[in-house]
Amino acid sequence: MKNVEQFSGMKVLVLGLAKSGYAASKLLHSLGAYVVVNDASPAEGNEEAAALRLDGIQVICGGHPTGILDEGFDVVVKNPGIPYSNPVVAEALQKNIPVWTEIELASRISEAPIIAITGSNGKTTTTTLLYHMLNIGGQQPLIAGNIGTVSCTVAEQATKDQIIVLEASSFQLMGTETFRPHMAIWTNLYDAHLDYHGSPEAYAKAKSAITTNQTQEDYVIYNDDQPELRQYALRSSAAKVPFSLMGRKEQGISADEEQIYWNGEPYVKRSVIKLPGQHNLENILAATAAAILLGCDKTTIENVLSSFTGVRHRMQFVKELKGRKFYNDSKATNTLATKSALAAFNVPTILLAGGLDRGQSFEELRPYMANVKVVVALGETAENFATFATSCGIEKIIRAEDVKDAVQKAYPLSGEGDIILLSPACASWDQYSSFEARGDQFIEAVMQLH
Image (cartoon, rainbow, N blue to C red; front, side):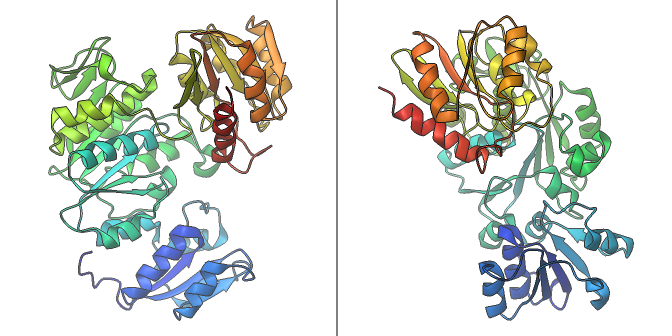
């Protein structure tokens, strides 16, 4: 950690606890800041609040008191999930008090260079893939951010000889001011989180903060196949490294049906890649470009590409049983993600889909249903998905009570060479606490098959 004096004597309101708020509070307190924590949940049973009070930090629980900002705070550090419509956040902005998320703290204290990854899809896969490349290459990487490890805690412990690979969401990036990664990776841009950001333009602007403060000493690796994203990247002061799936390109990293190219020269054959799906090829190109720029040798990169089978719950290969392959894509909580999953396979597929009913249309999936021979529909949207599947000409459609029941019903209907794919196209909260819990039940059910 840098020898930072900037926080000494600073008055900071930490809004929201959970992991990020707790870590930010502890860090700021240790750096000499006067910290007040405000969490909407009640004090009873709030273990984080109790622990902070033992450290002498003031914690206000059970709501957001009127006038809490009257103490004259220098900055608000908020949980990324708290919207900007929150009264305290809105008042802070009105009073010109900076509102940060904890990745801003990480950037300010980190001795280690930060490689930041964002995108509407593929962040976690790209982050994990790059981490493995660097780790196997002996570069002592640390993984942080939206992937589950609090960034400022990782930055506090990191040394200048390490590298922080940080997954950054739009929620986190929107709360930055001086955040400057040495390398910014932007995988793709699709409309998402519009209930939070308000418009596609505001969402894209939040994403673009990943490169706002970069200089010519830094790099931005970006999806050159998306014109809107390209325009944001081209405004960056960083060195531009485009990636493209549209055939061989002379600059950056690109791919055709046979090869991956680095600056127009053949680099590695696509046949070595284990991870399926055209969408995952975007992630592979982005991670590979970063690894090359960070000094990873070709043998290491090729070894990782030939062994990496995916992140848990994200097109995760689970098992092959009697010629059937099972894939867990429980993270596919919308049609965009399921569309990518279906496009990854050109063989007969049994699709397990359905979940929370948000009134969405499944029409976007229609061109990708050609290889689906059976649909197992579940959750609140089971009937809607079954109706949609029927309209696609799929004759075998069955209902299941939950994911376990779906696996048990899908397996007897499968044949050798088939894919059995959980890719729900819906959120999980109608039946499960999270997409992870849904995916875990799928894995458990598959492992029980014989």
